[in-house]
Length: 513
Image 1 (tube, rainbow, N blue to C red):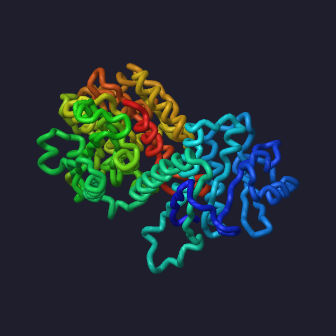
Image 2: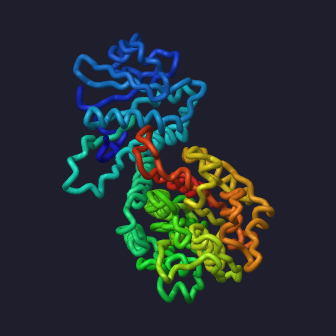
Image 3: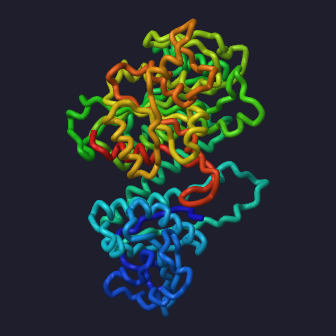
C-alpha cells in the first residue's frame, strides 16, 4: 500500500532507466502502442506486450513490460474508446496505485495524454479531470486505519511506500494537484470517522474545528453550555444531556479574499452557502436502546459532520470559492442516564415548532433541526446542504450504491446532481411530498420525531427536517447512511470509512454561486 503521494512538476526531468515507472494507455481492440507519445523509447517493449493474452485493454487491466535498460512500463487498460470518460480513470488510476504499492513505490509517470486525445477527451478541461481522477485514486489509497494499533499487534504486513506522481501533460498535472488535495481532505474525514468515541467526543470535534480554522484562516465559533440555552438549541441540549461529554454546535465560516471568482470586498455581503453535518459522536439509541449488536459502528454516526469538516478544509486550502461558505457541525453524544430525554417528552424549538419524542434513537434530526433554525435566522443562506447518517431506511431503499437526495429546489438539485456526476459520489433523488409531512404530525405537539409505522422511513427524516427550514430557502438533505463505510478492500478504498461527501461537496464548491 501507499504511505504518501507527492506530485512532481510536469516539466521535471524524467528518471533514468529503471528509475521510474511509465504508464501508457490502451483501449480495447487496439494495439497498446497505438497512442504512445511521439518518439517514445518504450515502443518495442510495449509493442511486445500486445501478444500476451492478458493484454485486453479492459479498464483497469495492467500489463507490464520492461525495456532493455530495465525500465518498467505499465500498459493500462482504458476500456472501450467510444465509452471512455475521464472519470473512468478513478478506477484505472486506483489499479496503478495498488500496483505501485506492490512494487514498493517509487516514481510513476503517466503518459496517457495521446490516448485521451484519440478518445476525444483531449481538451484542457478533460485532461484536468483525468489528472484529478488519478490524483484522487492515489490520494485515497494513501490512507490507513492503523492509528490505534498498539504494542500487542505485529507490524502491519502491508508495507507502505512513498510514491512520486508525474504527468507528461501540464493540464493533467494541474488536475492531479486538485485530486490529491481532495484525497487528503477525504482522508482527514476518514480518520476522524474512525476515531473511537472515548477519544472523539463533541469537545474533540470542536478542537479539531478550531485547529482547522487557525491553520486556514476560517472563523470558528463553538456554541456550548449556557450559550446553547441562550440560543434555544433544544435538540443539542436534550440529546446530549445524558452524557458526561457535553454537546456543542460548531460553526465555521469561510470568507473569500479574491479567490476563484472572488468579488473582493463585496463578497462579505453575499449570502453564504451553508453546509450542515450530523455529528453524533456516539449513538446508543438513548432510552430507546439499540439492541444486540446495533451499537457497533456507531462511532461513525458523526460522519456527516466529519465530511463537512473535510470539505471546509478543502474550501479554504484549495478551492477558495468567490462566495462565503458557512458550516455547522451538530455535535452530541446520545447516551443513557437519569438525565436522559424520554419518549413522550415535548421539545420546543427556536422557530416555535414543538416536537413530541416517540423514539430517542431518532436523535440526529433533533440536533440538525437546531442548525437549520439557527442558520435561517442568522445567515439568510442562499442554500443549505445537509449531510447525515440519518436512517436505516435509505439503506433498504438504495443499498450502498447511492446516497438519498431530497431536494425540492430545482436549481439546488441540479447543482447537486451535476456535482454528483463529476465527483463520482452518486446520489439518487427520493420523493418529498406533503403526505410525508402529514405523516409526521403529532396528536400532542406539532410533529413527531419518528412515526412508529416505519413507512417511508428515509422520507420521514427529510419531512421532519423540512419543518425547520424557512420557506423560500433552498434546502437539500443527503442521507449518506449507506455510503459512509466501505465494506471491502477494492478500487480506491480499503475497508473502513469512505469519507463520502467530501468529493461531492468539493464539486459544489467548484461551481459558481
